[in-house]
Length: 183
Image (cartoon, rainbow, N blue to C red; front, top):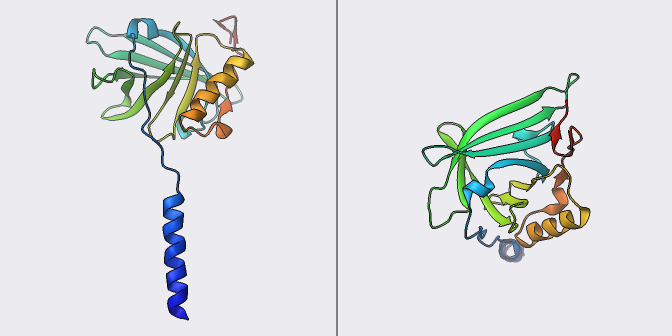
């Protein structure tokens, strides 16, 4: 009888292993014009992560450096009594020109993380960024607010690419009015 339990346990383990969802490789954009991508982006939504916990009014500003790397300035408002802003500056680069949408970004040398642009509107108004593991995801826009239909459409693209959009949190951008910063 004990052998039957072991066999059943082995079969259940194998079925569990084979039924696990595996992500397909994340396809990134085939072209990325850093000059057009440069400027301020508003973080409209993200998957929760530890390094942005307690931040709203989050922006990312990208600018091209003389060495062809990209300066990255991330800023966000902390949920504290005095609502202070935190800012961190880093660098990004494209390690393989054959994959221009697969950037590396570093805020603390020598550590670098993936920053993969997997969807980008033709007019460079909206971008979906994530990691191949699907652990990190950001929906970025050039304006602090976007149309709900556009938001849903972009989340649909993220879901089609294997991201858990049910866990996505919208980011409050109430400190920006018409694109202008307000303290």
